[in-house]
Amino acid sequence: AQSVTQPDIHITVSEGASLELRCNYSYGATPYLFWYVQSPGQGLQLLLKYFSGDTLVQGIKGFEAEFKRSQSSFNLRKPSVHWSDAAEYFCAVGVMVDGGSQGNLIFGKGTKLSVKP
Amino acid sequence: EPEVTQTPSHQVTQMGQEVILRCVPISNHLYFYWYRQILGQKVEFLVSFYNNEISEKSEIFDDQFSVERPDGSNFTLKIRSTKLEDSAMYFCASSESPRAPKYFGAGTRLSVL
Image (cartoon, rainbow over all chains, first blue to last red; front, top):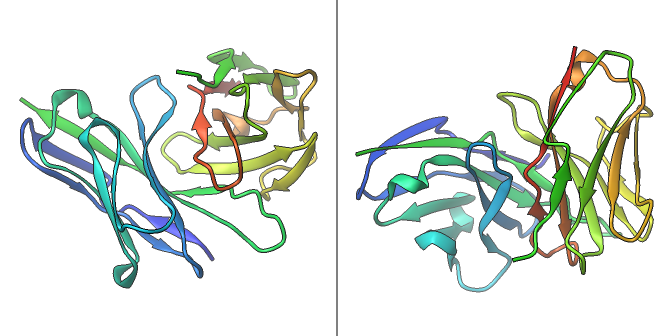
């Protein structure tokens, strides 16, 4: 069965430090991969997506993610974290099944990011 | 930037009551979704909707749930007889196509007492 694992429940980094949030997926075919961010009281905002092609994808707010098929991973990175990046981050895989699936998303449990001054 | 809007932001109801959660998807989107997130748990898929009919639903989406697009702009989720375990944040999403990114609303927090 398809699944997404985010092994880190909570990460704290210092402002200006680099960040890497881990995501591993289990999916039989080529996945469609997404990272979403949720600030308190807000909805899920799309940070970036991977469908095919270049395995390093750039997103909004200075984030990037790298798809590594051999490791079934899609880790999110940012070279220098800002205090406003404090939020919860969700990795998701889009499930496409032959026969007309509408491509629903399977989410990981999320990683809460805290940023200390 | 166009966005998905959901109302109300917080709904409190008594167990056994019916609730309707409302969503206005992005105007040129054709695919609509409901997800929910029970506190402390994953965001879970409930249902997808296209061309005025349900195209996919999860095990969670039982007979107590229904969706409707009553007019050209709204997309609703109805829970006929709420249970305590229905307490969750409910997210509406829309997309241009199945493979396109899904844009989510801010959610409706449903509290069943």
